[in-house]
Each structure stands twice: as structure tokens, then as C-alpha cells.
Length: 207
Image (cartoon, rainbow, N blue to C red; front, side, top):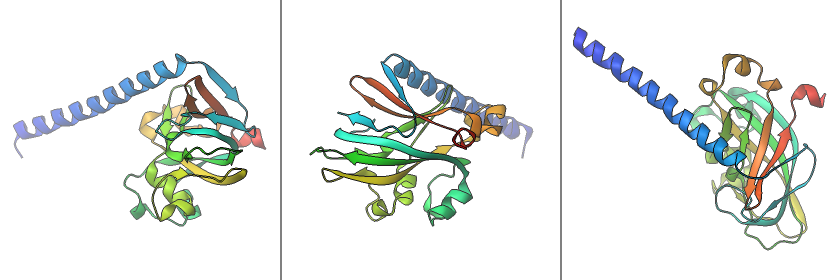
């Protein structure tokens, strides 16, 4: 390969990397700009929180539904895949770690269509992650056949689900990545009145 071709490839790689960081910087700023521009309420893990109308980010009206965060864990990808009896071949992308939120959904007396599990997201002081359709379906056997991340409950019932979020090392600072168990994550939903955060406590805090 000629020196000119090598220089071209090196320049292309640098531009690609710079473009990736620019995209992440822009989306992160947009996310936090919209997040902090709204009224925000924070709840502890274990409390039942009404989702409200348009309570998840993508499309399902969840008025009359509530959610409770029961547990939270940060797992290496192989450990998580073993837990849900899946393999890397089932995934379209391979996260470095998975933040797993164990929740219970409640339908008190609602005729709303249901809850889109992929419409929740997870955020910290300087980072955020979205729930991916593929992982959500794999983690919940009731969704595997359809691949649809939507859950609809009959009035007066409840159901426990697993909502995994993909974490990538490149989007975290080195010290933060090494100490993710001490990083404050919040399980987040939105409605027309603002944002609702449920604090996901670390393993040490739950001990």
C-alpha cells in the first residue's frame, strides 16, 4: 500500500472517530437540555409510580398504569445472556455491559393500550442509555414470539418484567466505567407534566 493511500485511510479513520464523538456530544446535550427543561420528580426504588398519559417515550398511551422498580444490576454481557438463555448470535449489537432494571407493572383500572418497555430510558449525571427492542424481547419470554416490546395488562393485574439497557465503555469516563456500581442511575419516563425518575440504588446501598 502506498504512503498516500495509508495517509488517506488514517485521515478517514480520524474523521470517522471525530464524527462519532460529535454525534454523541450533540445527542447528549439535546437529551439533557430537554430533560432539565421540564419539571422533574424523583422517587426511590420500591415505590409505585403512576406512569401517566404518554408516559413512555415512544408512542404507547399508558394512562392508568404504574411502575415499581424492584431491583437493579449491572452485568457483563455473557452473564446476562446466560441468565436469559440467549447468545450473542441473537443480538444485532454487542454492548460491553448491560444495566438490568427489574420492574413490576400495574394496571389499576385502565383501558389504555399498554406500556412500551422500550420507551423507558436510563440516565446518570453525564450519560444515558435507551432500552433496545431486541434485548427487551429476549429478556422477557412472553415477548419473544412477537418481538414486540409492548405489554398490555387486564385491569386489576400486575406483571413483572426485565428491562435491559446497553452500556458502552466508550461513552463513559475511565474512572466511572471502573466503578459503575457506585454511579447513580435513574430509570426515567416522561409525560406532558414533566419527567419522572426512579433512582436505581447500587448493590452496596441495597446490602
